[in-house]
Length: 474
Image (cartoon, rainbow, N blue to C red; front, side, top):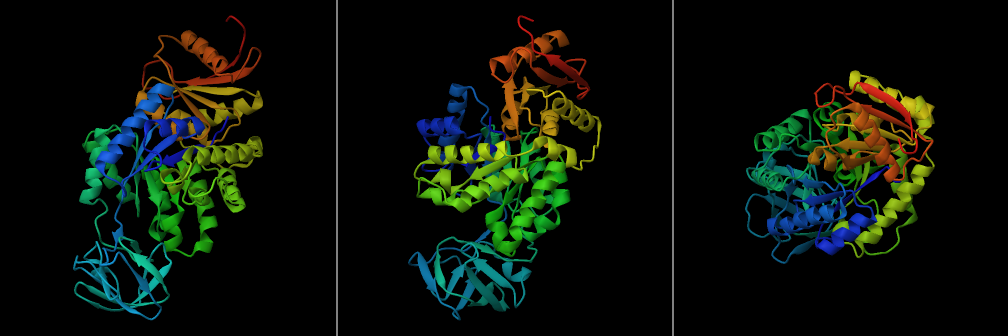
């Protein structure tokens, strides 16, 4: 059973009910709605179909709203695109009229105040480089450092410069309102710079009706990397967004940064997503490249909670096939992980009682060769804490909260299950045994570990660990 979860971006190739159902059956664990593309009407249709699919299949399938964030884009050109040539003089201006071979508009009108002569502007995912040669009010003069095509609305990046634009734009607020109205369980915040960025989006979401929202901070800049500890502390999860991150800093640094971000997130008990171009060739092909296979496997070996598909599932020729391919790669990689050795050598700081109980639960599971860990959780925290220790045994998270049930689909090794609220521990223990047997995770004679908080129904945190051997007709 695969432990690493798969996040899939929905788009024109994956918006109808039948296709989304095929994707869920192929291994999709999270449905991502990218608010940078499409209309509210289109997004509404995707969300409605996801909800129909998860009801029909009886699976945890959370909806992730991914905001645009404080991005800068150029405007349009009279002919839709231009050809940039090295040495060409080119201006970035505030005038919204369509541009030409001499200039183009930008969406952030105050950029000229934040930069200085000598700064570098990157466009077209870093493929085009412009050097700033002069600045006037509302106009940035540059010279192209290389050649290539440039089309409408491409993203603009300014490496190593802190911009003063607001983190939450009015468009982001409208997108968040849309997600809240639709009951989205997850919110991915783009271009998070520091802990305050996360606090801003959390305050907005909680004051607008989603107090239990799960916030994922996308690390896409040098500032995000520099402030990673405070960002992790304020977030529920982290996304290693390698596309924009690879534009903002030298691409040869990405592998080490990816490993660092994954390690820091895991140690803090937060789930972590590795994203961008994981199976990019499968946008147009039915088989991945060898390099892509290794990339996905290495993300698993690094300890990613989730791996993500973007264009591959949004506009690719066969999203279900791509998902099934990623699932097979992840499963094979997981078979080659020595979970007990990794657990023994891991240096983890236990911060509270839940940490200690979670650590002891996993330690016990290894010692008795438990076939499953069953955790009863109201908030999902104890299941996530157990997940951080990466046990070999599957983690069956039992909850009566529907939103927690769906959110736990992002946690490594966790199988969410909706259950009732029990009156006593005897009923709960019997339920745990029956559940793992019905799921095919354990059989008569196998050991399982059960953890919960008692007295039941009270907000007491996790304080119980029980080892039980499955017996017939118990």
